[in-house]
Length: 394
Image (tube, rainbow, N blue to C red; front, side, top):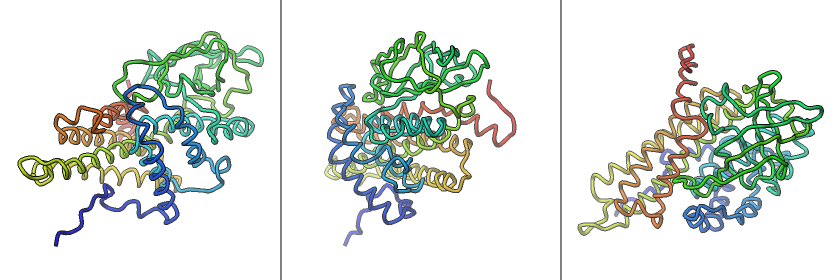
């Protein structure tokens, strides 16, 4: 009698580290995402349009409140739960996961960690119930990896207001966000500060970036700021330099590692299912040695990725996870994800390049995940400085 087939990509059972209640909640979330979100995903990706009906669907899941329990449902959840939640979102659709991550992690995280209590109370409740959507404007047309020292967007104090001038690029949710956290260099002291720019502010214009081959559903924007006036009350009061900005990025960078895992998991699931059902030469291609080799290499990468992200979240829970650990996790997992999606696409042959079989979307989206929140090279230098004591940044 044949043994049962193990279809679980979590081959070593890392999810067993969650509590019973957390596993049950994640199962409910997965069912909801499969039923309510997945049917919208491929069509939106192909059209490069954002399906705005998902906002209300995500709001019903209270996704934006999980990391901020005092503004959410009041329940405290472990950092490990948050990681597995990211995996589930990205397993369904990386683009819609990015929408959620930009809003919940980057925008809300900047306000929650960089704002004072009055600012948190003013903005976070509406963001938690998703009646207001956030964006995070850091990257510039001429500045990506060097934006810490080379930020060109400026802020000038004028009485009780600040005047912002400059440009931002690749801003997720930027075309429709209600609240955009804009990072600018103070002309007076040269330090980077954060400002919340509200939708409709004069001088603040956005345009959608067209022609993307990855994360097509994400509405990335070019933003131009021309004498944009922002009240002092909208300056994030606890942001005094780029080091404070980096603290926000260190937290979300660990989330990108989980995102990479979610992408890899789905590519593996699609490839395994296809191999079992695709018949060539009179038998399923899963019965061929070279196909099994591809699947096992994918599973090995995924298992290693699970190990690093689960341990990172354990360290975060203990207050021990720093920027260096997050940087290594991001660099390692996105590199291994890239291998997994390439092997998965290879297994599909010609069918792997059409959206019908879904793997093409994950293959393409992996390129964006590999690139954002710090390239592999920049994250490598963060870790390199940590282990040698020498900075190799140019």
